[in-house]
Amino acid sequence: MRVSQSTCADRTQSILIVDDDENILELLAEGFNWCGFNVFKAQDGLGGWRLFKSESIDIVLTDIYMPGIDGIELSSRIRNHSPHAIIAVMTGGDADIGRKLLNDGLADYFFTKPFAITSVCKTLLLEAQTT
Image (tube, rainbow, N blue to C red):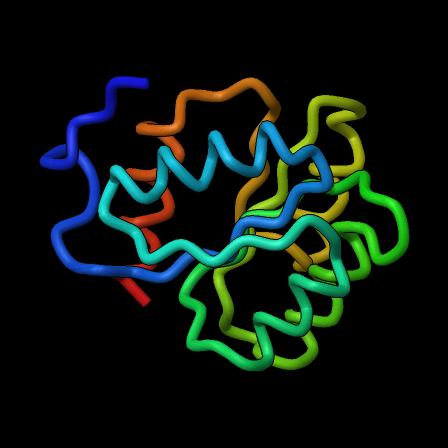
């Protein structure tokens, strides 16, 4: 993966990435790390929720469809706990649920897999810098 650090983060922002697919989780973690983010990762919603509550997290990027606590429930918990948290959801499946989460205020961004990590990195970094 070739990612230019100069095109991404100028200062360290933290991101929590939650995805039950270990390969995707590792790929995203590597990409956001290269972009200059301090990366936290979890393979399920419960682990993500625990990390969110225990760490200083600027941004959450979560898959929507996961067993147990899915991305919808995780986004809801985070939004209720921290109304101004930046939440981005992603899926390789039905895009309608992503749009619904945006409309319901449970997510600030929606990305369809596969996506360019540098583009998502820039988008989320800009949002974090303006809040």
